[in-house]
Each structure stands twice: as structure tokens, then as C-alpha cells.
Length: 214
Length: 214
DNA sequence: TTATTATTAAAACTAATGTTCTATAAATTA
DNA sequence: TAATTTATAGAACATTAGTTTTAATAATAA
Image 1: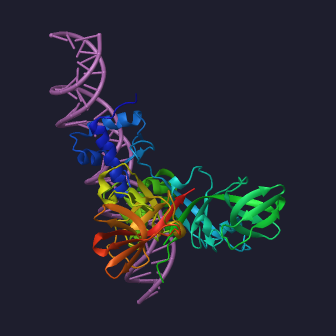
Image 2 (image 1 turned 30 degrees about the vertical axis):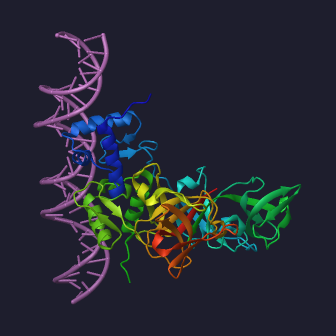
Image 3 (image 1 turned 120 degrees about the vertical axis):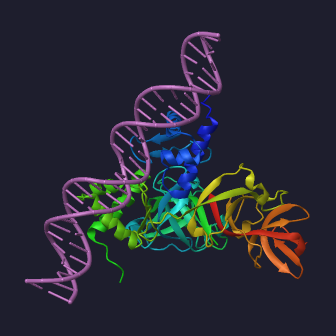
């Protein structure tokens, strides 16, 4: 159905990608010319026009190196990086009296780049560093970085960062709504669940990924 | 101690960073000029020279948009991403008869971008997708992506990708050298270790990180 | 103050680079 | 085969953009 790229066009796309990878800056028309052994800049231009029309890239007219590769363009190529803020620690164990969301401003914690394949939505994903071992049976342990999507509505069984209003504490547990109570279930056989009134619990996000450095 | 950037230099650095963020391409000298309300391109050039000398950026001479922001330069900005190849699956359970390293050419598996903080060395780190649950007690389970550094010498207790020469099988286990035998220990209470002659085992890499998408 | 250095300015210069024009060859289609 | 489209070539053109020159002004040191 879709337009079949010529060998030359494939080669150009590939070159652009490699060039971007190598130099962090798009190639010029003449870079492409020499890189792909093309006789004339006009041939490069000609093929770039086609690649643009076919949706593989975008060109900024009269702008040097004004080539922008588009997603879905070439094979598996997607610069799928997300920079997310690490807001602080989250207790997996005894809750700690810190509202992680409130510490946004505190730059004690860096941003980190995470691979986008961990995430579905493009919303304000954030990271929390795990303290404690209450979730060890869920394969999350002390020092792990958990990636969370902000949600207010958790489903039963989700691993969530929960904020206890009255206690002013945050904790990482599995979420179960039982009547008008919420059971916050650790995943560690030696620890007991916390039962709190639903009105006292604010779900701050649910875990969508885990990164561990060994 | 270190050179104190002038307000103008701060402004230029900030502009470059924002420009990169917005357009994925470095600004031209004249972009900076108008963006920072500077009267002359030579003033931009002058300050860029200083910024280069002070190690905040790198300039490619005679190259349009040849400005490269350096690490540690401005605030927390570090594009710390590593693109690593995912070479295939690794058995955490029954070994699978595939030499993952040999499948390098097979592009059945993508590259992925991973956060650089997972990794110490800059060597040829690679990823393997975990199949099976033999390492579940080590908090690694089916579907996880394990990040490995190529090593030939494992220490006792390291989690390694081991290649069994005779069987032509690869497996993910903990490594223990015991005399001239190697014990490959699963981390799953329902599974038994594999004992093999040391000469029959090639350590292909040791696990330095784990990424799980939930 | 005087000398020196750092910074700003305007303009010109040169090289880099996107774009266009015309012509030719190759591949398709009528 | 003739007509049409697609692709390639070479060259020239025009703008973009890095660099240099010279001069003036501000800041600092002697």
C-alpha cells in the first residue's frame, strides 16, 4: 500500500539517523551527499522532498541542518527518552512523614532519563526512590527507583504511592478498596496490612515501572 | 574559585539549552543574538569563546550550529542516555539453546535506551529479556530486561549470564566457583542448582541492572 | 591619571549550505 | 515506439551563518 522507499532513500534515512546518533546534530545536505555517495546536492534535495512527503522527516526551509526525523519513520528508530523528576523517597515499610509531591521544588533529587517504553501515557510521570523492604515479595526492594503515573483512581491490586492525610505520611503498598476502608497491603510476609478509611487515603500514583541498579 | 559567568553568559547558556529543548537542534550565532538581545554577532562569538574556554560547551569550527553543550555545564543538565542492544532472551529457568551473543546480527530485537546511571563502565553493555522465573527470589522475573556488562571473570554470588559449552545453552543464574566445578544457582526455592565443570561454563556477562515494565 | 584589559558595536568577509535551473538518462506508461 | 514520469547530474545562485576586522566604550589595575 504505502510508498516503497528506494534503496537510495533508505540509505539517506539511515545516514541521517546514524549522523544524529554520532554528532547530536542533523547533517547538512552536503553531509548526506558525501555520506551516501550521491553525485549532486540536487539529488539529495530531490529525495529529501520525497521523504518529507511520505512523512519520514520534516524540513525547515532555509534552515541549515533543518532536518527533523519523525517517529515511526525508520524501523525501530525512536528517540524514546523521557526526563522525569525524582521527587524523593517513598517508604516501603513504615510510612515516612514526607509528602513526596510537595518536595517537587526541592532539587535535592535529580532528574533522570528513563526509557519511554516503560510508560504508556505521556502524563507527568515521576520517580521515587524506594526505602524499605515491604514490597520485596512484589520484586521491589530498597534502593529501587519506582516509576509512577499520577492517578487518583487506583484499581484493586495496583501498587500505589498512597498519602495518608491524617498521618501526613506516604507509603508504597498494594491498594485494595474494601467498602469504605482501604487496605494498604505490603508484599512482605512479615508485615501486616494497614487499614484506613478511604477518606483518609489519597492515591498519588501507581507504579508502572521499576529500575534497579546492582 | 572557578570563573564566574557574566549575566550575559548565563543568558546565552540558558538560551542554548532552551533552544535545544524546543527544536532539537543547536541555535545559530544569530539565533542567540536575537534570542538574548545582543547587538552584534561578534559579541555572541566573543562570549561563546569564553564559554568554550571555561568548559561549558564545545564549538565545531566552520560548522553551522556547531555548538555542543557539555556535561556538568549548566545546572543538572546531563543527557545521560545509553543505547544498548537487546540481544535476545535469556533463560531464567530451563536453559534455552541459543547463544545470545551470537544473535547479535539478528535484528529481531531492538535497541533500547537506558539511563546511564545504571552503568559504571562504558563497555559494551547489552540487554537480555528474561524468560522464566528461576531468579524470582533475586527480584528478577519473567519479562524483565536485565542489563549486563560483558565479563569473563565472575565473582561468587554474581548474577551472570552463563553459556554452557557442551549443551549449547544460555542461562541466568548466580555464579559460584567450587573447586573445579561451577554451581549455577537459581534463586527460586523450588529449583535446584546446576553443577557443571568449570571448563564447560563461559560467563558472558554479569547483571548490573534490571528494568521492569508493569 | 594612564595603561591595560574586558566588553560592546558595526560592518564586512568568507565559507557553508539550502535552493533552483537546465539537461540528460532511465524507467514507465500509453 | 512515442510520450510521460522518475531519477540523476552539474552548475550556478542566494541566503544563511561562522569569522574577522576595526573601533569605541567600560571596567580595572598600575
